Amino acid sequence: MQTRYALSFLIILLLIQAPGASSQNTNTQLNINAVDAYIANKMRWPRIPGMAVAIVKDDRIAYLKGYGEADPSGRPVTPQTPFILGSVTKAFTALAVMQLVEAGKVELDAPVQKYIPWFRTADAAASAQITVRQLLYQTSGLPMLREPQLLTDQDAGALERTVRSFAHAHLDHPPGQTFAYSNANYDTAGLIVQMVSGMSYEEYVKQHIFAPLDMKNSFASQAEAMNHGMAMGHRWWFGFPVGVTFPYLRSELPAGYLISSAEDMAHFLIAEMNGGHYQNSTMLSSDGVALTHTAPATQTYAMGWQRIEVDGRLLITHDGGTGHFETSVFFDPDERVGVFVAMNVMSALDAFASPAGPDPLDGVSIRAIAQSVSNLATDRPLPDQGRGIRRLYAVFDLVIVVLSTLIVISFVRIGRRYKRWRHRGIASWPSFGWRTIIKAVSHFTLPLLILYLAVKVPLWGVLVMLQPDLAYWLVAVAVVLLVKGVIELTLMTRVFRQTYAR
Image 1 (cartoon, rainbow, N blue to C red):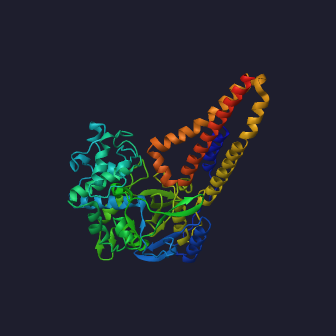
Image 2: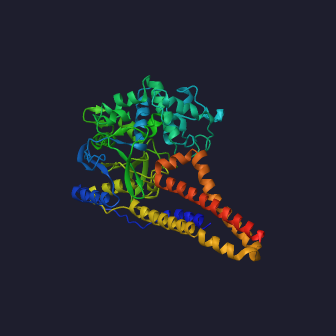
Image 3: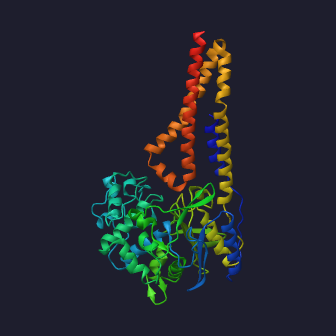
């Protein structure tokens, strides 16, 4: 019983908000030394393996640097090292759709079924009302979906199978009514790009975005990126990063799995801040770019971008996280200063680490880092740093140690309790019996629930991916409590028989 209460206490502790500070300064001189010192310090204490930073000013790259290690071999991160972008990919997908809009091949207010005739959800009438614009604004009503059977699919039909799987999905709300973040929107938008253009989503992005922007270290394939020095991702294990390679989700590529480097993302940012122009290439008209940065009046999410206001400044931003990588983009369209930051480690605790983004998992550690780099680059004070992964893991590890110690002590004391039971005998059996039986049986409630979740609930796999230390610790606790419960019930039965045999 105490173990269950302590686990609840852990969750409450993780939700405690730490104080932060935010203020404004209008000096736009890039302060590179402050940025460098900040990043070096940020990496040291949480043990971040590797990071890459790009800062752009107007139409030029003002700063590029890699920090730390790309993989356990010690290979250094460089500005050319590719990282998985996570949900920052959505900005690319929105851009691809807008390119087709300007080419006259897609209409934003046309129903999705015009371009994907078989597109369906569980509500056939509502399905017909979902428009392309609603997908990009994330107001379609499509829920956050994940089909476990598609996670390892790498063939050309993976994306189509993902969108076809929505046929059994129930909308969270009527189309166009309200914002609700869902990768399903951008998976569907990516399939529209694929079906309208007549080429795969991957090939379209390479030809129409990567090539014009001279993004030579950007990829739509993990295998290809790994052959060109992609960083290895990591997960936190009790505050220590451990390298891991996950299956590449081609089935969700348009929503979160493009791969790019800091240098290439600087090119992308220059185009975003300069009306679609990068050097001699134009990826989209200035009006088209402005539209992607514009959100409906009732929300802050635009087309693949989020708009936030900080101390009177409008910032365009988006974060990304895949379970072993984090990225974040911030740019000020008025001062025309943009920042991209990537790091090769993540855990579910990162969702509580920084001020929240549009995605529940996008309030990641790197969000505060990227916004801080943006502020430091323009001589502004640091913004709210959020709770911080170091502080969260200090609480997490402390609670894990305390709970584990209590469980071990309770287990060790089984023998002492058994001796007391034998000594009490039949005289106090009624009260002793019922109280002890209830106590022993309670040992089975939590462990059986945990084991059920681990075996039957698909979301358990997400916990294992995003927070493996907690997932495997819970399984270990479940096993220990089950063994403890079996032992105590066995000893109770023995005392009962011995008592009544006298």
